[in-house]
Image (cartoon, rainbow, N blue to C red; front, side, top):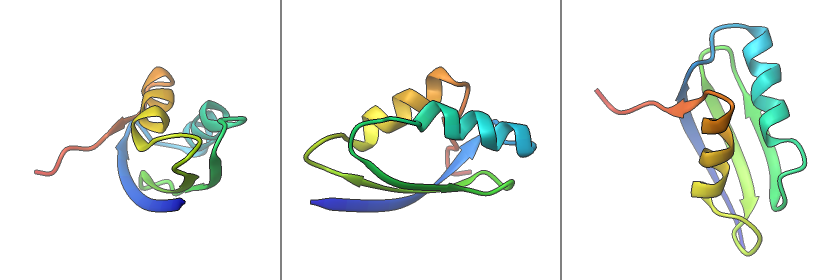
Length: 71
């Protein structure tokens, strides 16, 4: 089943950050679509049978990006 979500991330400050973010997700099994903005908004779509939201966030955390906590 395909799922999608828009997540606010910390650590996205420039175009190079967006490229690092893309590299962190490249080749991730089950990832269908990812689109990030310079404001740190990341829209993800993934196949829930092949990967999970947590696995995607873990891959991003290894590259220095974390989900922003609500204020």
